[in-house]
Image (cartoon, rainbow, N blue to C red; front, side, top):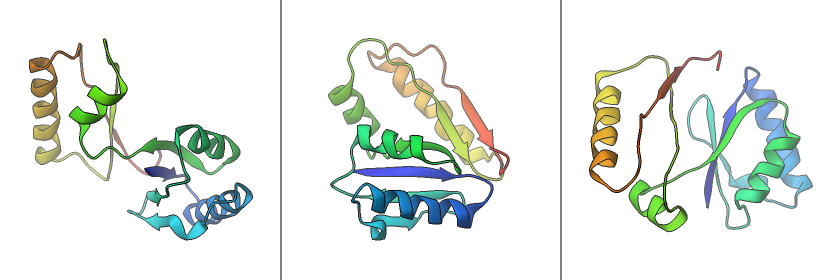
Length: 129
């Protein structure tokens, strides 16, 4: 599974902290890769949802952890039934027209499906979180 960890303000310290905590849980720290300036990506067969949350709860220098989903429709069909409540976050420097178009497309797509979608809220975050 692939998970992401969003770094806090002290990126180098946060990355070192995650490596140490991974070793403490018996995970290979080499599975931690830089995805962007603010995101570390972990690709590990040993990592699961419960363990990712346990690791995150031991960390002090991170904003959030999440699972990377390659196909949102398949993920929702496999994992959930009934009403689905979710949020989207854009972690970047500024909002773009492309991002806005993708969000609009997601709203339309989910409203056409059987998913109960009231509103997709997007947070445009800067380095302050």
